[in-house]
Length: 74
Image 1 (cartoon, rainbow, N blue to C red):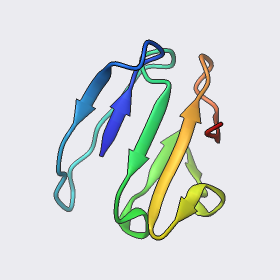
Image 2: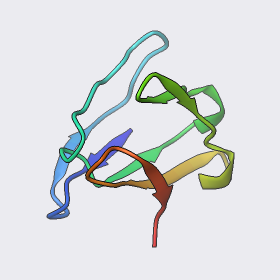
Image 3: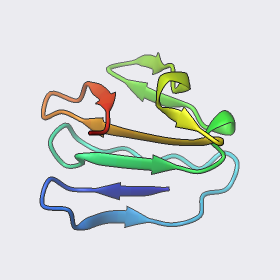
Image 4: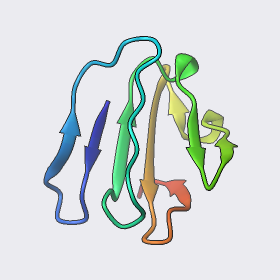
C-alpha cells in the first residue's frame, strides 16, 4: 500500500497484513496504490468502493479528491 499527498510526498507506504486497516482524512491523501487489490476493501463515507475500474494486473491505482471521492489517476 502506498498513499501519497497532493505534493507527491509519501504519506504512508508499507506491507499490510490481513485484518490491518488505515484511515485517512479527506485532503490528506491524493493518490493511492494498492497491491493484491482483489483482497483489499476500501471504504469512502461508509460505502465500499468498487476497485475494479482502477485495477490492472491486480494493482489498483486511484486518485482521491479533496472531498474524499475516488477517481481514476491521470
